[in-house]
Image 1 (cartoon, rainbow, N blue to C red):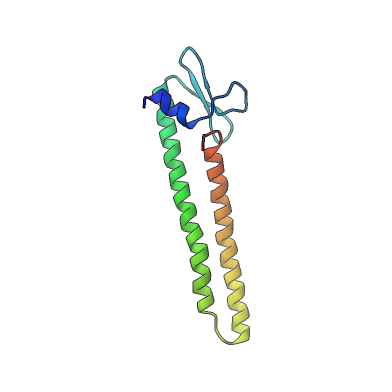
Image 2 (tube, rainbow, N blue to C red):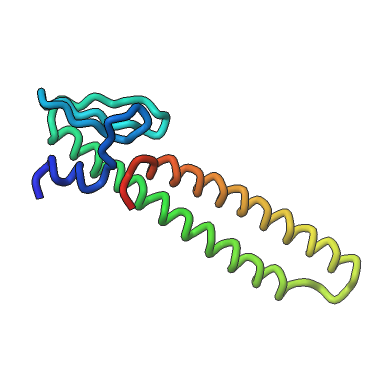
Length: 124
């Protein structure tokens, strides 16, 4: 697959302002980044390199999401198994578990938002 095909395979072609890439006859390629700015590439090779880098960023964020997701699931079972018998300590342990899980859930939400931004305008 050449550079032009690689870019076209991953980005949605548009003729409107809200799409993700445009192809001009003079060879200029514009790709919209996660901040909705247009990045101007003077060749398909440069656009393909940007695309490969973007795919690597996506892979890394997906890996981080998987790690956080496992931490949420794994952390719950660890905390629950160590809850003491005493009711006062039990209540404190459950509060700590809730705080811990809510932190991981906030991290997960931020990672998922970052992933959505990175994937904006890309084909599934």
